[in-house]
Image (cartoon, rainbow, N blue to C red; front, side):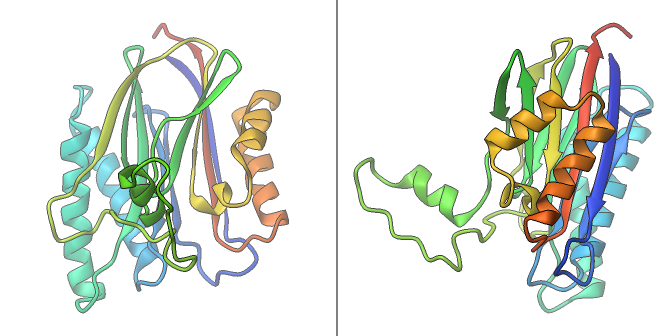
Length: 240
């Protein structure tokens, strides 16, 4: 597959530390984002550990097709062990959303509330589902039933990498198409830039670098309450 890619992260206007991490390795055809869990110490360390471990697992496959579920479990174990050193009382955690672009397929692995989007033939779709209290509650509630959510807890994660329990990872395999564009972003982007605007920006910009620059700048200009990170991948051709 012939790909063009770019990544950008911005600390924003409020946070004292950037706890987002970028995974943008064209040589491995591996792309994605990680966002250290706020409210816990060691978020930056958790995100960095996760992306470093994932890249190592994929690279160690030596060109063979890596098992992304196993790769995520390996990253989870690494983050748990790091948490025992960095924050033994509470542990540490991070979201992870990645895509492996090989053989005409895009293989996704996802935990948390960072997101992967695909733009194909003018249709912009979220390819992941947030693992938050709000999303879980909406999934389980009966249609027509009144749903009461606490404003302070609705965005609380129900899953993250770094949990000392078996990790539940969402995985999916999608057939790629020439001309489609993918976007991986943290919630510092999605809480400030609606999907409709992301779709327009991703379609309009001529290069991945332009796309991630515009998207992260927009999030910062609208308040920059959190770190803002984006990775864009343009699929130009399916041939190697």
